[in-house]
Length: 413
Image (cartoon, rainbow, N blue to C red):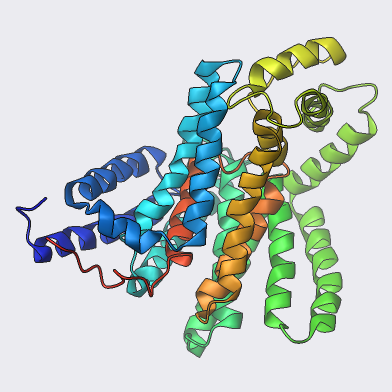
């Protein structure tokens, strides 16, 4: 927009960075409000965009190229899908990853702490409300029950975000030199309360993610003493697991349920775990029939229904929109290239972060994709709106090249 001066464009860029702070706060609380803010950011970007200069800033970033490959393969998968309706729905979810390069145009290194603290503040509010419901100080609302007190998000999304919050607090407490003694005590208090909160809610994937996160933190803390990290992990994980199992009824019951579902799978496949096993087995049948290019973007639903009726008609769950495994879903729908594109957006950020001299970028930038890589074995967390936007926002400021041409957001008129 030539009628805008460079100074005014810089102000609008600053506004987008502040909107990203609000998004960071809103992620655990309101999906609808996040979507409104996303529209504002995109409209603002289109209004001030200098596409030639924007591309110069982004073109050398390998994470950006990984995103483009991921979205492009999903788009071309529409050409051979067996359901264009489901395909467009799936592509609509995948296209959210293009927000990473858009956000990168506006994030500021000086604002990283604000993005993080805004998110932590919202998670702290969620935690306080969760405890208030659990102890029946306030009545349950939204998704929450006294038995599973997660008011703003379902536990499947709440616990992974809670794990990331605990990791960030552990990073500042153990791995960073930025806190004074009083701040470390406060952070330690919330690490403990959030860890307890983890096991009075029902998100099993988030709980597995939590244990993996503890191991990652120990290896990062004992960076040059791997044997110590292994020894502490061997003692810490069983200890936490035992305490949680014996003190939390919901965790106790859900662990027992997993064991029962697995042991009774041959006689009863209509269980939570049984359905997941069926989904995996039947999905591999689809993969064997379409190993190279898959069944197309969004093609899982129809393909799975046909295989399910042929192989496991005794199970009452006729079909599912996904196999509760992000890797299998991409392999089914887009073949080897689809799986490769998913691995790219997980591996390249790790490789890029390892080289960073900034501690928060190096540690969090490695940990986030590793933990997401783990929990995507049990669900499609990079398709769900809340966890996807979290991953997208944090990726934008963790993997941006702050030494690029427009680091200071200078624009040309």
